[in-house]
Length: 73
Image 1 (cartoon, rainbow, N blue to C red):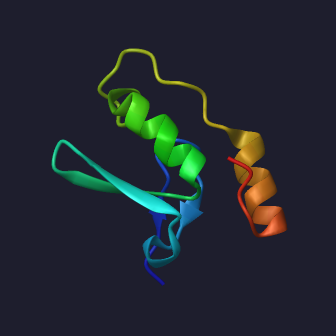
Image 2 (image 1 turned 45 degrees about the vertical axis):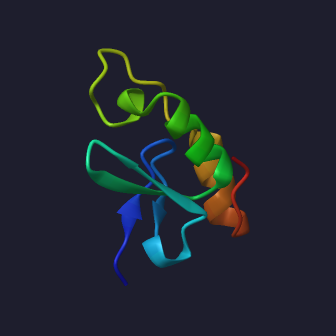
Image 3 (image 1 turned 90 degrees about the vertical axis):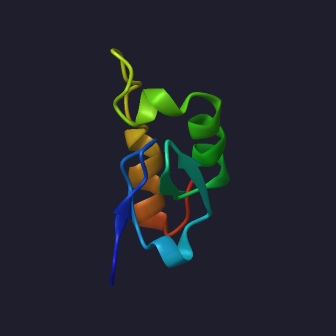
């Protein structure tokens, strides 16, 4: 299985099963939930390392999503 990392919450996901995707600066990113897409779309530079201060990953979201099989974002 080919996997990618959600840039908002750092969850590892299968892009074919992603809740959404967004393209920024010519690169397509995949997300575990619509909430992560919304956060990314509001400030993509914060999540791809173009900003000096990146937000903290939503660790509780990832833990819940992996343990329960669905995302809470």
